[in-house]
Amino acid sequence: MKILVLNCGSSSLKYQLIDLTSEEILAKGVIERIGLTDAQLIHYRYDQKFIVAEDQQINYGGIINNHQSAVNCVLTVLTALDLGVIDNLTQIEAVGHRVVHGGEKYANSVLINDTVIADLEYYSKLAPLHNPANIIGIKSCLALLKTTPMVAVFDTAFHQTMPPEAYVYSLPYNLYQQYAIRRYGFHGTSHKYVAQQAAKFLNRDLKQLKLISCHLGNGASVAAIKFGHSIDTSMGFTPLAGLTMGTRCGDLDPSILPWLANELNMDFATIDNLLNKQSGILGISGVSSDFRDLAEASTQGNTQAELALNIFSYQVKKYIGAYMAAMNGVDAIIFTAGIGENDIKTRARIISDLECFNIKLDPQRNNVRGKLTLISSEHSLVKVLLVPTNEELMIAKETKLVIHN
Ligand code: ADP
Image (cartoon, rainbow, N blue to C red; front, side):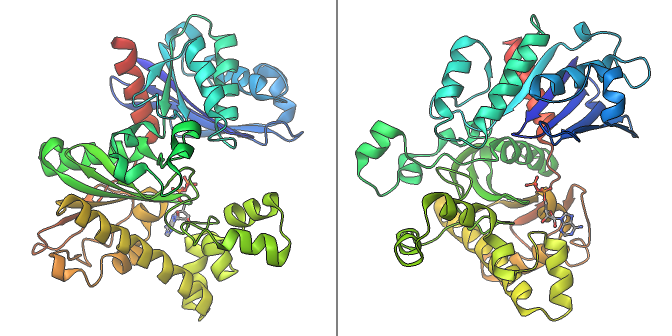
């Protein structure tokens, strides 16, 4: 069964065509700078890389100047004699769309119809940076693949099992009732996937496990997963909350916002940009939003880079402590995403001085990147695992589940 997974952002489109029978990626790629004159497609067929630059686009559906032409280009390339992997579009049995926000209504993935699209438009108020692009991707795809079933897989859905004490903010309650201001949480597809993989690896029933999943990438969040359900997570109403991230500030004293407005005369757009684009480890270090650059700067004696790394690790450790308390223990801690899968030193910093909770890393086992591995010591009662995430595969699996139901 071949499923196309689409992740449509404001100026980019990522795709994977997955054969779910073998879980093999037949083709994948990305179009960046949609809407600009130099948009190009980078397409991988099996492990061969091709670049479809502007002068070749005419051979693959026409110039990419908007999302619809981007989707058209992807579909044309997938079926092209030279770059393609399928004979015709009917071989795509379903399309799974990554959608950031499903509000309170969507606790599960759903078959897309007019009502769903109207709901997503409504939830654009909650995710103005993401949902509009996701909707454009869905509509562009529907226009070209009229009879193919399409499924929306939400970043927020997995966290809809949180109890009210975890998701209600300490604001006047009517702001929740009238405007749905609450914690939603994100990265749900990844947290769900790695939790399932961890249970499989440990040969345990997910329904009997208490897990803490640390998705540490440019965007980063921690989730407490008790008996298969998310019961708390660090991101909130938006993906700005929780941990300090590449450029996002994470949790702050909310009074800082009016202070910036009153004392520094910043308007809302400036503050929003400051919190989302100029803060996090970039803001603290003044070096970069990338952990590799920070590690490099820190070894050269840059104390602000070192501070940024320490702040990040300290915050992840605090969430681990909080979620152990929330679940009355933990069986396994999972590291995933760019930093979680690759940054050996950051993992070691986070899992340091936790022996009193029976959590201990094995430095030898931890010397690994991007591979499903047990990295805790033999004597650690709590298992620590590196589990590579695979959001696209999870979206494809969810899509299959929905269309078969
Ligand atoms: P996102 O999907 O949110 O954009 P990723 O999951 O791709 O983010 O993670 C990006 C982060 O992973 C960057 O900060 C990058 O520095 C970090 N990263 C990737 N590879 C390594 C590595 N080998 N060592 C340390 N950090 C790494």
